[in-house]
Image 1: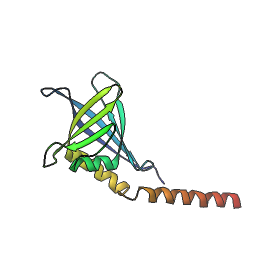
Image 2: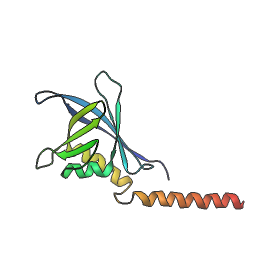
Image 3: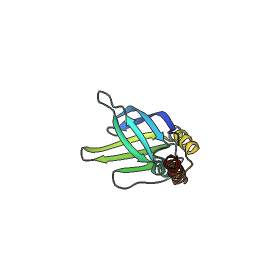
Image 4: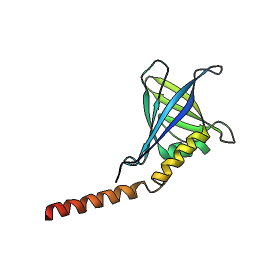
Amino acid sequence: MQHSRVQGHLVMNLVVSHELSVRVPVDAVYEAGDPYAVRFAFHLPGDAPVTWFFARELLLDGITGPAGEGDVHIHPVDEASTEVRILLRSPAGDAVLRAPSAPLLAFLAGTARLVPVGQELIGRELDAELAAILRGRENAG
């Protein structure tokens, strides 16, 4: 399988308090070789990028309703689902981000064109079968 990817650039707001938030550029990457995961690199002012991996399905579910457990929780901010709230928990502390849903949905639609949701294993199984066939030819020759 050719290692195709979908890349996107999003802008989220890091919520510091009710009165203050900071715009954070985010590079989003999805690779067909790891079809369940989406990588977000958060570019915080004055710091090296911070990378988090999210389950693609978690992001999709969190746009329309509460999703997640453990370190990541996502839910729509309003009934129209125009914005999502992302809570990240780590030993260093918690972070709350808000992101417009439309750019996130557009990025996720691109991932679905590359690897349709629900068909993540199919590509991997085909890759394994093809590799086994090719190994058999090498051994036979």
